[in-house]
Every structure is written in structure tokens, then in C-alpha cells.
Image: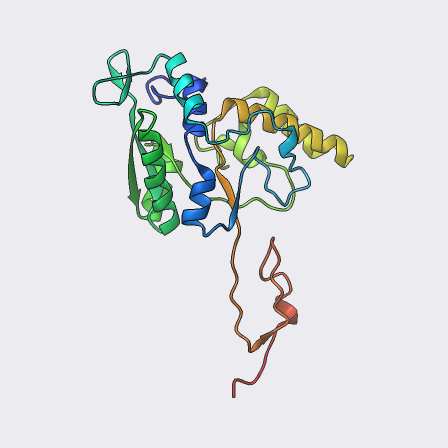
Length: 252
């Protein structure tokens, strides 16, 4: 349950879903990430054995019509200025990110433009990383924020979605769903990988419907290696996994 004082815009999940439908993630990957990325379907990364896009019920393709329909149904009507309002309050909020990433700054600018097309007034704001981190973890002074993260090789995502992760974890918007807690706990105690995968698919489908966070895409990292460096073999998980075998040739 969201706090109506803290988050007056997003109490209705249809608003959250509309914002998701209105983001052209394919266009962002091409324009901002040089096509080095994949649109997220569910929450598990593409490389995970729990990645199951065909079993995720809400995929959120770019669909302006659907986004507008959801906002209409939720009672947010466009005013003379093109901005939606409900009960005399405009659908207008800030969208925070850190200024250390040029891509993130471009992302929030693109999202501002895409949301404006459906009558949503988002104002991007950026700040230095430590100030941004304080905002996310201490003051919680935000409407929406954009941040990057990395998952490990295991599909457990307790640190982002569980109630316990509200303190010391990555659950910065304090999402809490007892069924999600239970599924993630079961996932950590289930040895059969096929059964474990189904638990994570159930978890992803709850998250995809409720959208406490919206995972935009999984980007690909790039690695540049000097010709003098030998046996440096970056993989998709860890660039430095075999550092003990690297060697450098004479530079002459």
C-alpha cells in the first residue's frame, strides 16, 4: 500500500503501467546505448537461467494507445495545456538520476518527452552521486528515480523486492508483498532448478503486474584491450575473471 501523502500520483497501478507502455525502450537502446542492450521482459536478466520472456504475462511493449487508455480509466484527464489532472492536481512530478552517467541523463530526457506525449509532466533532475544516494537511501525525497544496478549469476532478487530489503537492501521505495517474500524465500531453499525457475517466474509476474519498479533494459558492457595484453578474455559476467593468467608483452 502506497502512502498517499508521499506518492499521490502512483497509487493506482494503471498509472504505473501507463508510464511503462509509453516508454519506447527499443528506440532508447538504439539512440543512447548504440544498440548494445535488450528490452527487459520480467525482471531476470537475459543471461539468467530464470529468464523466461515467453512466460511473462505483462511485457509492456511501446503502446501509446494503451498508455492513454489506462490513464483515462484511472481518471487522469487532459487539461487545456495537454497535461493530465485529477481532483485539481496535475500529473506532474520530478524524475531524478545521478549526473555521473551521461546515458542516464539522456534516458530521463527521453522519458520526459515520451511521457509528455501522453499528458504526463515529468521534470528531469540530476545531481552528484553522493547527494543522489542520500536522496534514495536516507531522505527518500523523490517521486521517481532512475538508477542502474547489476545482478549476479544467481536469479535470487531478494535484495530488491523483499520486505526485509527495505532496510539495508535495494528496496528503496519500500515495496512489500507477502507472496513475493514467500516465493523468493522458497527460491532460496529449492534445489530442483526447474521448480526453482517456476517460483521466479511467479515472482516476476507479480512484479510485472504491480510495477513497484520498472526494469527498462539490460545493457551490454564493452571492453577494450590493448594488443600488448594477452589472455584477457572478458565474458558477459566478469571482465576480470581470469586476471591471474594475464600477461603483458614488451611494448617495443
